Length: 170
Length: 455
Image 1 (cartoon, rainbow over the protein chains, first blue to last red):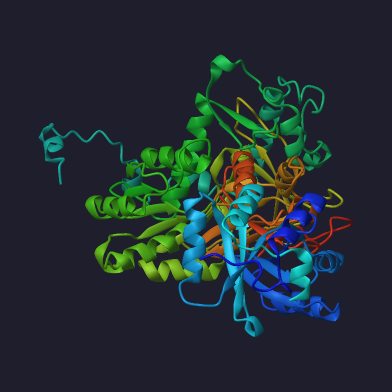
Image 2 (cartoon, rainbow over the protein chains, first blue to last red):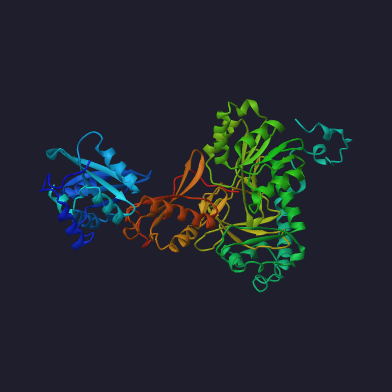
């Protein structure tokens, strides 16, 4: 399936996306913030509290568990601010561009997207998503090895990737 | 079993078993029960001999008096430290040419911190005699089967006990460490009666017995265990005795003083007899260097009274203990020392290996990706000593990639292994979560339950 860019102008247009890419490079891409945490009680709530007190909204959170430590990946409405406030609290934080694709919230949709990526030899290092209830759509977050190539492939497939601003306005 | 053909050889017993005929209790009755006055005379004589010999070495040439008139004068001789041994590596303490040396034992250390002890043929012979005497004291006899489960190699615990056991006449199995299933098979096949083992390995091995559906108390012939090479409590000793149905003995030794056989428990199990015909014992206040009277706790200072190739005089062992004031019921006149209560320095003993926190610090400091803060934790997991090194993940090195962190862990573990010869478990922790390196930070947390002991 292809997303028709005209379907929902408030979210995306292919043209607008392309112009943003040209003008700002990766600066306006969606990004996730990753925090290094020890595997002990209270670490998630500490992070959530810091974000909450700074007026930041968490869109999605995943934790990759590595035994005695874990990596907490966060999609927030303002990744730059999230990065800064967490850093200020003395945590080890990193920021990384991710691909955020709008997909339909229906059975089989994720399979379609990932099969497409697979055919195009895009290697996905991490994937997670969240549902936009009001829109009957979902956002799929992808960490990929080759960000540039993935951008092209996904754009070429007619999928829309969210910019930082779009993610902020969700 | 596959060794029947050995018995086809005509059996001739050439063993001179004078001990069985005389007194079963002592290996060397005359020396072990020597009267205190006689022991002092012997010590003074031997101390003067060892001074003459030591003056042939570069290190001691100008440090020693000509002759002692009495043992009172020993305290005026300067102390020798581990640092002296390192600084004069490899031959500053040698009194003979290398052609007269038949063995060396060297400590770990790949970064120039090594020490070496050289032995002449007579040195090995004297050491072997002391180990045989020690083992005999605990009840080992010709006819026993001794399985030596300590690592063979540079570590003195393997070869030291091996030679002593052969001298005593026990059937000696050089099993070395590790390979639990094979250890158990050897015990069963050859009816092992005596083992030399680290306490943690003895406890670990018990769980393997359980897995195999064996009960060491019923399925084996064990009766004596020498526990050594790492600190352990009296409770652990009792537990091992209970689990295996045997008598376990403490011992004390250090490679600078040959290795095992410096001090050993007798069957009274009340303190370890330190063989004073071969070692001159003093206890000093580690701060002031002042000699302390018997009964007071302090750092043991030892002199090799018999060693030819590399005598060491007034050596600071770093081990804290006290001397018993009462004579022992066993009749031996050599004074007893307590369990080792701790160290006057920060040395750690893990799996028989001596490790200084500085060695770990040096490795970590040489890795720019590792923070300046670290913490060493010693734990006993499933009865085995483990060393954990906690390292902070600084913001500068964190790129959100688990694969990077995992390879950092491996790199830290590999670098440390090459320095301390033990693979530590590296634990990554959050920045600023460890005690700061300024001032007196606590860098070592020993969670093993104990009064210390070593061999």
